[in-house]
Image 1 (spheres, rainbow, N blue to C red):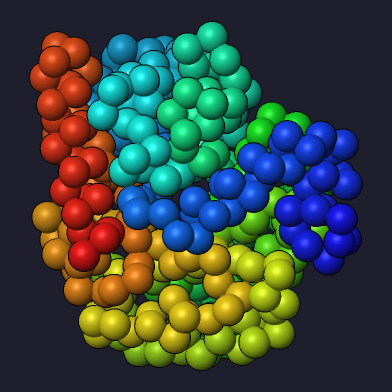
Image 2: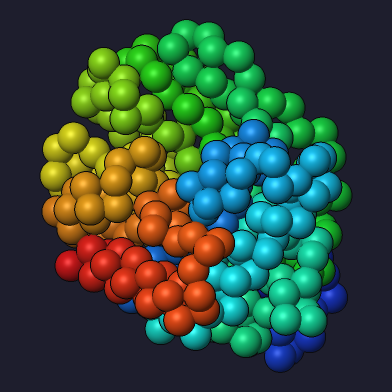
Length: 317
């Protein structure tokens, strides 16, 4: 056991046995080399009503947050339990904290994903966005993060995800976003989990291409200080210039580069993704596009199967 290695650190932190250590190695290899994409199932309180509306569930169907989260959990469970959803094409899935704490198929959600579907579980850990300043929104403070990370580790979570937003090509603002992301990312690594660093560039930004140039430079500066045995993942907006993330994909301290759909339609997101070799999808809205609470099981499975197939094809092209 080497304390510097993130997988060994998982064993030291959680008292995992040798069998679990082998599982960690298998998950790391699957995420580094596997073909497929990551399903983003992490809508939180602010984004859940819109996600449910797109799924055909009106706000009148629930009367409070507890009922709303019951409905969204039923939607997520239906997706995950579909025979179309498995590790052959879906490498990982990002969970909302409330989903991690619930069960799917009579098992903890993270345990179900890996043991029944061979899909690697991740957890959304940020507490939302601060007010805009310097053309960006950094993450709100997260004072209870260490406790959340320890709980996630015990539940079988492999990694985490946290989101900031960049709206303008402001060098100081983008530097602040990246610095915060890596500071928290290193805290996550110390806890024995793999962080997905997500500095999203708003697709509607009037300075999107310019912001991407500044962002890549800031990311490379931090990555060049990051040991290769403590890798991070990057979740980025699909770029304006095809192949723009090639240096990030090839960096020894990057486990995987994944792309968010960011409001693009699934067809548009898939087309952009297919032109960026080595980048795989981590779609949320684009994944659930076309799914409906009113569909029969056969209709639902057909719809999610077609969605998974198209995103998978774009991710391996």
